[in-house]
Image (cartoon, rainbow, N blue to C red):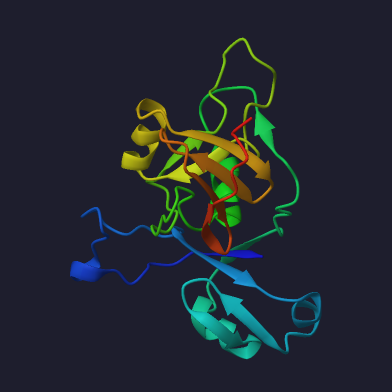
Length: 190
């Protein structure tokens, strides 16, 4: 479940956020991962992204007693797409949750709102529907995005969570949730 806290957030530099602007109410989002048993009973362990494990009883301390919005659980197994080049927030959020780290080989940057979401198969305005979706987007830093687009690197999706990257010199890497793995077999790229 995602909980959106509707109160002022504590921010560095005397109430100013990273961008220098004032922090506004309703802008703090936390992601809470918990079992159905913990949700039903209010007793057990849960995990808050960015903080780690907490007791369910500690959640009230985290979100306070003010108004908040609980969004439904997002089923990351659902492939969601749209028929336009621009990426809606609901798809951007899903891609961030599916791929919390950049998907370029040996990428280390955490996926955030400022990161590029690149179409694995280039977007074609005359192509099939649903090209901009969870199955065809990968979070990349701007440099990696440019290397892929202009540096003759190739990428293809092998399964829901595995990308295969091929360098211009033929080296291949699989990027998975467990990291980057160099492929050493002599199988040529299809």
